[in-house]
Image 1 (cartoon, rainbow, N blue to C red):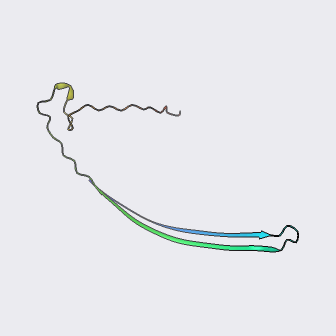
Image 2: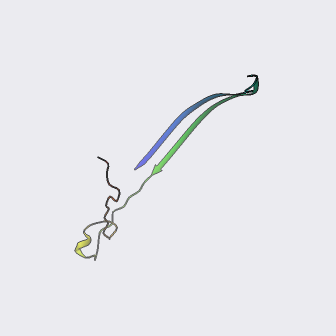
Image 3: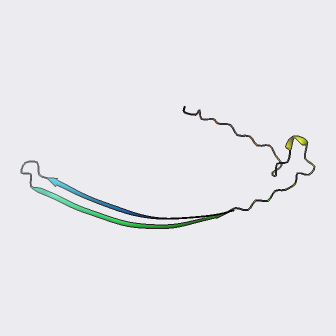
Length: 80
């Protein structure tokens, strides 16, 4: 099985920061910040799986390819 994912994103941020004197309301600091960005990514994944016969294992192990029992339980209560 193979997966290939691509993405392209652009970002645009424009901020204007001002500090004024409280007594005179005169501007003390003005910062104009403009950021533009572009991001391109490619992700690939290849999975190979092989199933092995269970040989010489007790019947309670069944035909699982890894030869041991597994179990999973939800420890976090679900939100209904």
